[in-house]
Length: 116
Image (cartoon, rainbow, N blue to C red; front, side):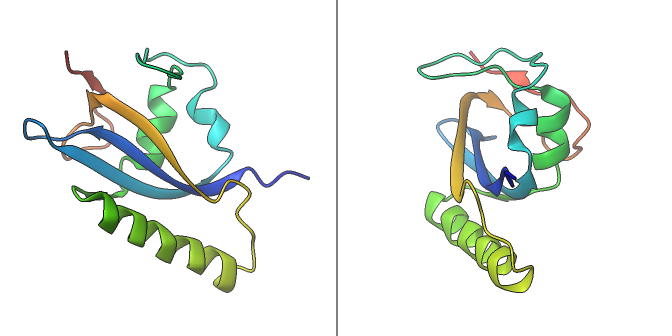
């Protein structure tokens, strides 16, 4: 049986010009981010997102503006899942690149905004 779990880093446009934000979260069944997609994403290898599920998973996630800190935090979460829960991570640590959208600041229930 497939676990379909992993630690994911959602990369979005930051609140300041030229800045990126990295949201780190552990979740199972990540394919729900793409199922019943209602939010178009552009770019190479882009897939549309399910806005509600994306906000549910990453809305309360820890936010970083430095990629290395985000990766380090993701490794800590992965270690916790592997050693404390005695699970394995089927997808390991993965990035979801959505650099053309700005994640809502503060509340998780707000809508994603496309930045042109």
